[in-house]
Length: 159
Image (cartoon, rainbow, N blue to C red; front, side, top):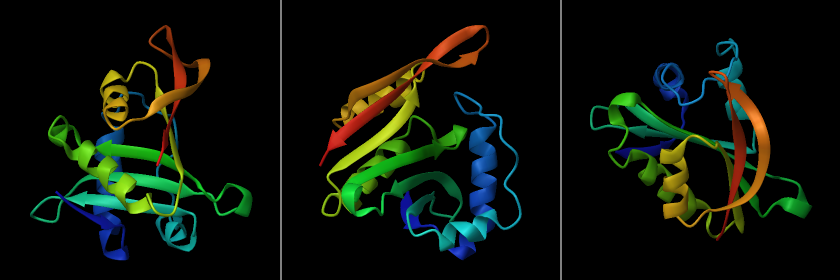
């Protein structure tokens, strides 16, 4: 997998990628489809970086979105907003590659990386632990699904 910053030429690939990932995500958030102009707004937002994972045919197979805090007092914090891999490419190391890429890319500019994950997403939790993230917060029963509740866990890693 080749990882590149999201560029204008990736617009259709990115939208197709988000659609494929969200249709088979562990926990589906109820949200409206991507609105016209939203993609362009990403490029005007200085505190969001999106990376896209492309296969050897330049087809999107994964992405990661990070949010940089631009306020002086907390500029050392980085939040991984989301990591997603298409269903057909899961369990092949793609998420590990994206996570390693993020850690390497920001290790000299940020001190702490945080992310959130639903408690039942054990594959993601195990991945984060493998990379040295530790649980540093929890919102009990944050989400309800299929008659059950899931906690929202926050994981942190010091770089």
